[in-house]
Length: 40
Image (cartoon, rainbow, N blue to C red; front, top):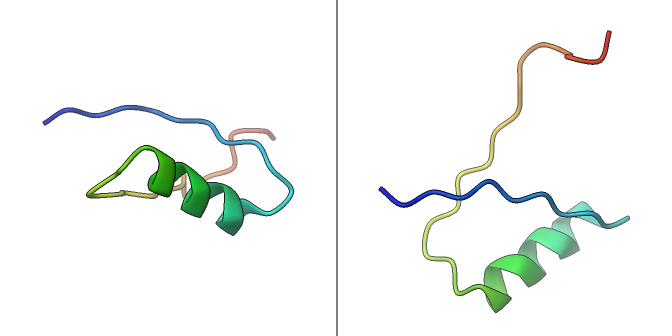
């Protein structure tokens, strides 16, 4: 499995993800988040 961590910065999160996936010809996208807040 070939994986990359990507950080996208934009005011519109959905738009940023769609543009990145379109430009990078991504076939499978896995999105996740921590269940705990790491900034306490």
